[in-house]
Amino acid sequence: MYASEVPFGGKVGLVEFCSFEDSLHPCSNAILSANKYIRKMKGGSQSILVRANDGRHYVVKMTDNPIGPNLLANEHMGSLVAKAVGLPVAEARGICLSDSFIDSHPDLWFELPSGVRRPDKGMHFGSLFVGQTSGPDRPTEYISPSRVSMITNREVFLGMYLLDVWANHQDNRQAIFRRSSTNAQEVCFIDHGHMFGGPEWNFEGNLGSALHLEMAVYTDLWHDKQVASWISRFQTIIPEVLTSIVPPMASEWYKGDLSELHSSLTDRLLRLPELVQADAEKTWHPSQQKIIDESLRLSDLGIHDLRTPDTRSAFRRGRATA
Image 1: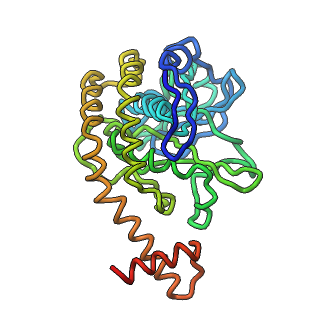
Image 2: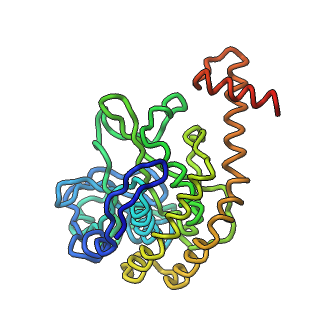
Image 3: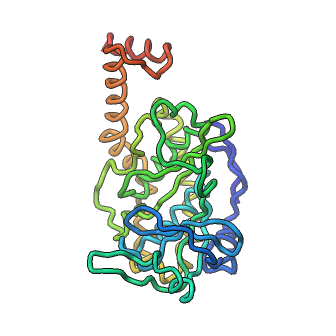
């Protein structure tokens, strides 16, 4: 059990590793059943939005999806590891789709170049839909540079980036933003299917894939002390988490070698400082310099600069002395 502070002083609740088996593990008695089909979601995995028998809505990725054989295992591991280290992620549950449910809703069937394919029945991966499913309070995946300062928990983007480097995330980091009544934004990370070397569990290279597309969310987050704190936290917590969630993985959710995956992830955890340094030199630091240069260019052209005056002055002073 761990109860501790995340870097930047944020609180993390108690995380009991037995809870992964008792309440979150898909093979437990907490498995839910879909009882209402809402719509198909965007994306290559052709996930669907359903309401389950607990009355809540879940985004469901199906076992035989078009992306790859290990996608559901990646989603499951990614969500539980991220939660254990204190990062905001959607709740994960096993969701059963029955034959009658699948047959009653042909819209949820896979659309392939060769035609339509019926999904298999059984237990699939469900991610709790965060926020309202429709209307003005529906969460969004887009955040404009002008609203980045409104993200109340923006510091977690650093932790998620470092976790994605460890997991050799093969795609851009996906997130959703919920707006509060005060117009503030809160981020929650989603879509972990391309973590752990992607659907093929391939850990060869691929530097620089783990950043969110809106690079402004990372502005001024890099501090060596916080980076070291996150890495230390990962190296303390993740080994026991992996031991708890990898061996009992649902067999229909993967086709790779779990012991080999466990070994690769353990090795990467030991080498995480050097992995982070290599990735940051290629992506993080150049991307932040690009944001600074672009912001200064717009300001010089007389276009409204969205940074604070003090920040603009600091950038210009640094530029003048460079």
